[in-house]
Length: 310
Image (cartoon, rainbow, N blue to C red; front, side, top):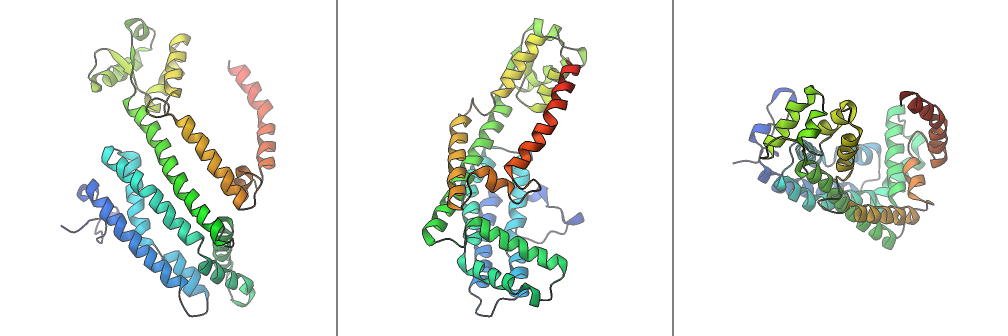
């Protein structure tokens, strides 16, 4: 049977035919899409024609359409309907997708073509939208280290793959703890709960094969208890149980430390003093200092509001 992820979708609004898509369809579809995207990028980078907006920027915008298409379906399903098969695919392909993106964003041939266009942008007759797209591609290559030496570009690609793998493990640890963690409630606990919460917590216990009432680490289960339960001690127990997500199935503290270390290394290679400066540069705030100023301005009114609410 043809892979539905690689076929034309004759569906309302072009939505994925979810009823036909199986977990085992994703690995071959992602493999094929990665090969196609790499070939499209290579064709742009090795084009002997002088760079122009069409053969460089427009081509880059259109390259990898199949990969974007397949990856979007996968990430949507992996987020909304995760299972062990999807999580295994995610662990396998996350670093590979990151490596592909890094190969594009650090390719010196693509960078040279974009820089050539930027240098003569005033002669290209671009409208405001096209010039903005050119600016964004140039900024992406600069922030990715495409203008650096081969050793630096290689290390940046390694960091990108490592971060993708670590971030996937981090997210999957949180998901596993939200899905599998269970805090059983005593009869005394249940008696302190508002009547409206009891049926849903009984359903949680039943779904886990337990009698009585229970709490998972799902936000939808926890937040109503934190908002509505008058028993401060039970609220604290539920809150502490909830805050352990990501620590029970695998220690996310160690993963977070490694993520921070790699982010700091990447910032240094790219010439930034720290990850915060790198991260805020293209955003509205522009600098960590601007973010801090906003938080400082909000802090006093927020503390006052919390005191009045308490």
